[in-house]
Length: 307
Image (cartoon, rainbow, N blue to C red; front, top):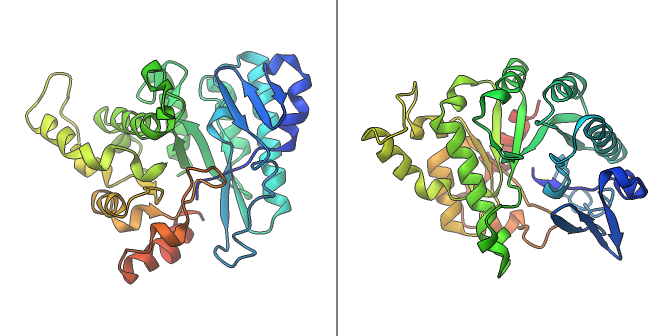
């Protein structure tokens, strides 16, 4: 779980000015973001199968390519381009599964993609923690969640670049912004009741749930003491959190143990965030866990979820 690829079709499309992209050496520049593409290109970096560490891999676009800035026909062209490219990669490499990009800001287009991408080699879908200026609790997204719920879809939610300019120094957009944006996204779904309202969606969040395991108790306290803006829900925050999945990319043994306690060991998926430098080896991340928990995470959860 949680491995990134860039299809070659994306680089070829830079000649189309409509997508507002350019290449400078090994850097792909997009509106408001840049990504070194050489290590991600076409999934050729992935060696886990050759090393005997994984039977199956789930790949998806890096967050910079979740283009919620494109509108109308450009959004349609982009969605078809990237999803066709990721599908091609999954078909080339035996054992690869793909997550399809959903252009959540274009509702009808998203519903069409859900219909088209619900069979092998698709394992589910990937979206960002925010959709433009909308959070995931926005009522305009309900029709999409209803369609995903009807299909029992797997939905991977990855943090996007924070709009907080205070994070532009010291690589804080990643080091602090990513776990914060994940926590904000999870809070919007849990405290709005949407996690409970759409119980058949298998929501999965990256980076071991970001800040959520550390502060879920605070959400619970606010809920129990009826703080302003918090409505009565069918499930408390702690109960709703048990419905969510997270990956193992915690970068800290104790943080991963807390995530296991919060979400349950059967809701932890092995992940690496490869090939980015902020990725983590499965061997390293799971080293300190009891053997029974390692077996559950590595051998049981992943195959049982993606069927």
